[in-house]
Every structure is written in C-alpha cells, then in structure tokens.
Image 1 (cartoon, rainbow, N blue to C red):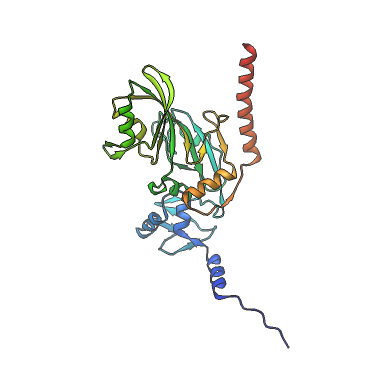
Image 2: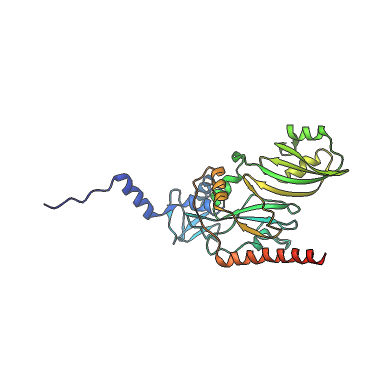
Amino acid sequence: MVAKTPQQPKSEALRDDRAKEGEKLHKVLARTGLGSRREMERWIERGRVVVNGKIARLGDRVDGRALITVDGRSLSPAPEAETRCILYHKPTGEVCTRKDPEGRRTVFERLPKLKSGRWISIGRLDFNTSGLLLFSTDGELANSLMHPSANIEREYMVRVMGKVDDDMLQRMVEGVMLEDGVARFSDIQDGGGSGINRWFYVVLMEGRNREVRRLWESQGLTVSRLKRVRYGDVFIPSKVKQGQWVELERQEVKSLYRMAGLELKDVKRSTAKEREVMDRQFGKRRGRAETRKKSR
C-alpha cells in the first residue's frame, strides 16, 4: 500500500503562492520613504509608477529583480526583512535635503554609504538647529513615526533672549494661535541661566516647521540656540559630537518600532569598516581632549 503524501492546507499554499509572486508594490514603495502605503496607492492609480517598463496597477506584486521607476527615476528598494537605524548629531549650518540648490552641506553627506536602499530622515531640523536626527532604511517606519497620530515627544534644549515670566510659560503650555493653527509645549522646564539669557527644556508632540522658535517669538522673545536632545525614548549620547553618527542599539530600534506600531524587523548592523571609521572619529575627539588637559 502506497502512503499518501499529506496535502498542504489551502491557506498555507496560498501564502506560498503569494510569496513566489513577490511583495505588494505599494508596500515596497512605502518602505523606500516616498510616503505612506495609502499615498503610494494613489501614486500607482495616477500612473506615476512603472515596473519593468509597464505602468503599474493597484495590487501588483514585485520581487527583488523588478525594475521600478517613479516619475521616471529608478528606485533601489531596501530589503523587506531588514532594517537599519542610526542617530546623527546634526550641526547648525546643514540642511535636511539630499541636494541643496545653494550648495550648502546636507545631513546625508556624512552618513555611511548603502549598497541597497537609502537613508530616510525621521523628521527634520532647520538650518540653524542642531541635535538629534534619526535615520532609517525603512521608509514605512519613518513615515509612521512622523505621522501626527503617533504623538511622539520631541525634547529640545533652548536658549532664550529676553525677560521670561511665568505668564508667558503658562500661555505656551495652554496653547498659542500661530498662522498654521494652535501650538503648545506639553512641558517646559527651567534649564538655568540668568539675566536676559536663560535655558529651558521644552517638549513638543508634533514637528511643525520652526514651531519651537515661533512659540517663543509669539511672546516677544528670541531663540538664540536650539538643540534637539530626545526623540521619543531615544536620547542623544554625550559621546556623539556634532557631525558624528552612531548605530542604534537593538533595544532602541525595538522602541522605535513599538512607537510606530509596527512589527520589529531584523536589525542589520554596520559593517566593520564603518565601525572602524566611527571609532577613529571618537578616538580623535578623545585624543584632542587629552592633549588639551595635558597642556593645562
């Protein structure tokens, strides 16, 4: 008697067939950082996406060999199952665009080069603001973290010029009407200083353009220095100086995915060469600091 080969359940067979077909196109596009899944569906409907020379349709699936172009520009998708996240300490004087028509330095110039995919900025900092800036190869993660519904805290250290009183602080916590709607700090803590130059730590739950500066300006005050020190659960490490980046630990990456409401992917680490470059930069900083101490 010949034993019968057990049949695969229909649901599992369907999943296997879909896996062979590839991944849904709008998910692949979202992961590159172009926009949310829903927005990518709209782009496909408008005929902006071409796969292997043919205009894409909603529901199309693609594999790793597919040639994808959006508005005539070729795309290099990041691996589906992997993610990589880094923290960059942005100096003032850098812009958060990939290319600047005025020729200014961009935040992407110092980041490690990728063989596939690209770095996607999680939020932005303006030209005169320094501090913590996060990057990921997972565009869906970046879009989810930046969406207003995520309600993620952003903490800034700010130096203010002018006389600050309690009524001003109270108004900025309760809410101030700006040209693009009501804005408020969810928390303000005194950071020290005296006279007309005082430091404060402020927390926002959104990332509108120049919102911190505009809130203080609404009270007749001027922000002379502004630095982001925290994004959600991620703080800027003291060892990471301006112009340097550092790989996020797995626990920090896990926290980002939790805040975004997404399932954690495999965390890909930096290459040995990249780690060597960063260690050398940190070493140079330590070496200069030790030299200054000895000279004293």
